[in-house]
Length: 405
Image 1: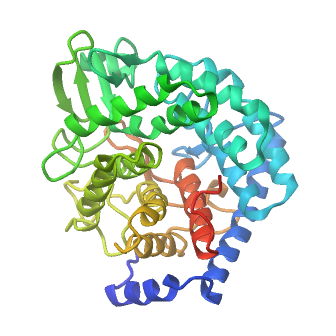
Image 2: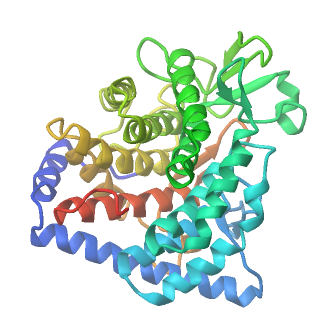
């Protein structure tokens, strides 16, 4: 894999750091056009099937793998379509996004895992924010009610997975909480904003506080799983599920953390959450195992670095978070870091050529190496956060709020 030199990265940083330069404008315009071409091909394939499908990744035979409605990734493609509409302002993308979003309506009642937040947040919440569709508001609030059923008061956390089914049952957990759940808190915070019901806000803040207390090591890296006793709130174990080992730092988990705590600060203005986002940033970007191009290996403690697979999804999520974080701490260089990541992800090393790679945008992401699943392939959420980062970059460089809502 080709890696940019340090001197090249410095030049790129300077090249993209000035607002509204021709180079910046071209970068955004070119990526908008490329994305539209990719999504046009993706939609053509879906329409040929006669079904309404939600792309997720590629299988071992390089065929597109589509997500079931209740899979945690099912909402991301609708989110990509909403972001495509936001970037292009073309009504055809709005119509297609609505179609893919409404197909997920039943998920508002899902209570058996925590990722109703991901599914409804990326689809209905984005649709409500971008297109102001009134009926989507009720879906978001109902989904927040469903997510709230997983709150365990004694522990003060949202239980991520059920512990009596699937591979999770083999781990003998009682109340597993994964760092990923930080990404689902936005749905709860937003539901309070939309409904006036502070219950959702209080649950989200409690979860963020307990995760801050119990998931993070002294170096500000995160465990993947903390298992609680749901009756007493005691911690039973701190372990791994998708990273390399119990004590390793799974790359996407670190990105979930910086993004999640930035969102928590947005809604609560609690400085503890801002400080934690900044500490995670320091862990990631001061890590000696972070490659020169800022696209991490799948785990910062992976045993075969520098030959370990990269994870573009961790990079794109972190970049999007950094754009928002830069508005709360404007003199820390966070936007420059985000720009470097976005520039590298948009390079031929990571960007897909048209009509290849299942028409996903980015190559080289990792789902779960311990589960032998989605290794060095395109994954829909990498594309989703790349486009989100592109919107945030566009907004900042046009002197607009980083968030479009």
